[in-house]
Length: 78
Image (cartoon, rainbow, N blue to C red; front, top):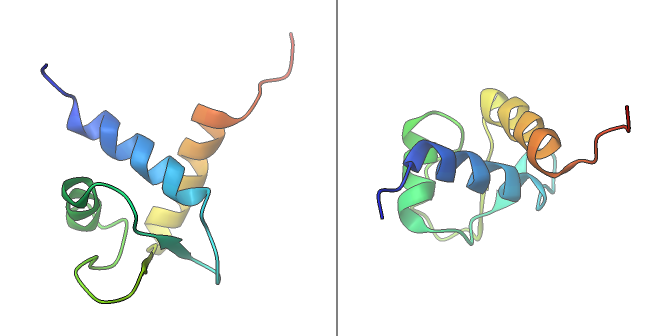
């Protein structure tokens, strides 16, 4: 399959938002390649450490919330 890694990263960031705790930290129990790409894009702190969670950057927090709402929230009936 020819994967769209940007879309995968968006899904991972939105799912990570569901684990938000301690202000702007999320669990890093996702694919390591995706976590690395999110770090390269400036959305999360470096995932290569002993902690079980990473910090979302200010930009990452905003984007994660937006994607979570877009992908997972119910829309009002029209």
